[in-house]
Amino acid sequence: MKIFLGADSYGFDLKQAVKNYLLNQLFDVEDLGIKDSNEQTPYYETASKVARRVADHSGNRGILICGTGMGMAIIANKHPGVYAAVCENVEAARRSRSINNSNILTLGGLVTKPQIAQEILDIWLNTKFTEGWDSSIQDWLHNSMEDIAQIETEKFRNMDEI
Image (tube, rainbow, N blue to C red; front, side, top):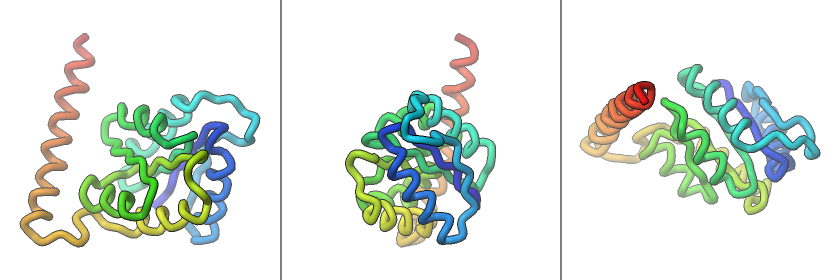
């Protein structure tokens, strides 16, 4: 699994900590910016760049970091095939994977300490979709992803007609 990583200036320090942690865990990480804390690339450009890479590379994931994680999630979720989740604790990370099959984790550089981010990352990276749910719920969750993909296809097709 490759992890695409991006941040804005508010998330830069946490991104560097996350990147170092992931590299020490031997993950394949591609840093899509920003490259220094003074760079003023808008958060929505970085979020779109990471979201496009995740959407184009099935099975890979992304991590986006801005001030709260929310701006990055809003923009990333505008891309088809992207399921970005703001996670401020390990339970949110676990549920974002087991229930929602999130493929982008967003964190807040102003609200998340590096140690907590590591705990969130460990859970988010190691929890599988439907993990911990009984078989009837697992079936429902798998079917829901197909329904969501259909809604996405219809929505984006209709947008092309506008």
